[in-house]
Image (cartoon, rainbow over all chains, first blue to last red; front, side, top):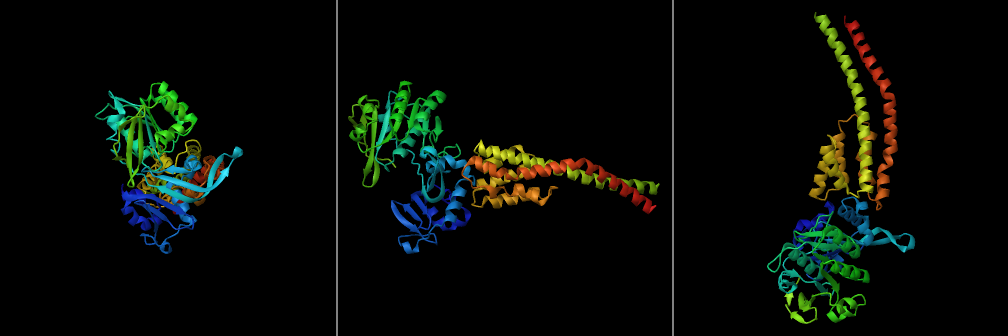
Length: 321
Length: 172
């Protein structure tokens, strides 16, 4: 990742302060700006404070604080001075910027009738999550995800922060572009939270392959059906199955002849099987492969690949992010 | 012979001056209409297209006539460079430069120049409505300029020709 990508997040008057941090862009994970609070930076899994001279420090007394003007300037800059164009994203509490980096937003919520969120005003908390695209993380798993050149229905199971989205993105890229195990396929990607393709103004910021069509910022259920109707995908990819509606839409997609590539929060196959909306899926053996991710020695790894009978095919222990 | 040529040149010069004034008034009306058209287009692109301002600048840079075309393209390029410069500064520089030579009053130039000051509203329809606040003012100016144009043009041309004749008589 380029240092410019980090510097481009901030307006000109703040850039000198971020020069030194941007030099280490590759190791940067998160920047948090909170009104009248010290600026924190997460780098190499370690939280530190930003000093006025742009250095990272553990001493909170040297930390620089963000004020509301700075936060407003950053937000206006990130929105290309067109905050109205990002109203839908702001309503959801996050937006994706060039480079696929995700900006979490928090402030005062404006409610409309029936307690639906109309918008957020006084945005005073920003969480800038730096995207790290890691190409090739799925390469070692690929032989297990094909049968006679055809992609198998695959479910990626992972606890939070273990590279679930990174793995999904790389699999989409591999399935779409083709590889030693199968030809390239048309992939329909429902990117509900703009995390996989990292689309900014409709343009994917991450490499998601040459045959991938993205339905960006669209709820999974609607997105899957829309893609099937409009783009005739061979494979449908979705992130974080989380409701009965998602599972129903997935069922319909499989009935339409699409292969599924999905992710779900979970620590084990058993735990996923206990989720009410997943019980039927697991009993019907809808997925041919389960890719289990986890952490070992502070590294995210593929802890196992299981077949539809939930028998272990491989325990790669391969780093996945 | 020289006298005759002098008379002709004097008359042509005075009439030319008058014609220039008339053309300026005509151009002012044209420019005011153009600014109104731009503001309405910005409003619709914001409210219905949900385009960001840089996108609108690119669009205008592709479809507008000079001098606006170059100015909008320049704003778009500078914003794309993303050197962190504030939009209102870039906008004021470029739009100010392109409108410098136009026969518009300062308050009319300000309408387009001050657009960034209206930005920052979360709701796209409200934002578009805010941008359009100056439309009434602009329409009033256009109506006034149009209604007076015919008479003013006639008076200006008459005065300039009369001035020519007066000068000729004076110098003979």
